[in-house]
Image 1 (tube, one colour):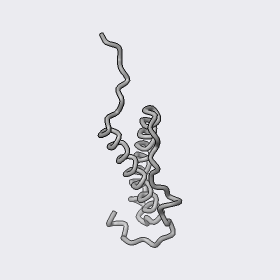
Image 2: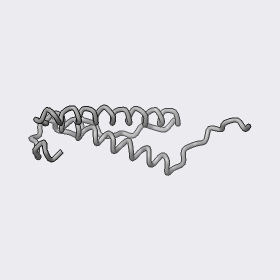
Image 3: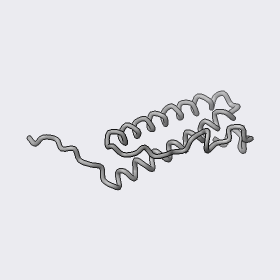
Image 4: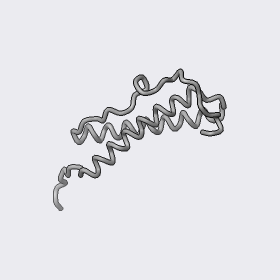
Length: 95
């Protein structure tokens, strides 16, 4: 049996991981805004659960980037990219 080799990620794999990280950080911003504006108490736990799952994805992706010695993408940030005080545009039923 051959010893295991540390195979580097391909450019396509890195691109996929990078895109997933950017999408997840954008989604976190959207969901936190929705959570701040939601009025329907039945929707609130669904949004919170989705935030928790997405944060788990970001942690996993960060771990992969660190393990592979790749820089962490500069994703979307609540304090830079979202105005939490902006008025809502849609009713809760749209989400």
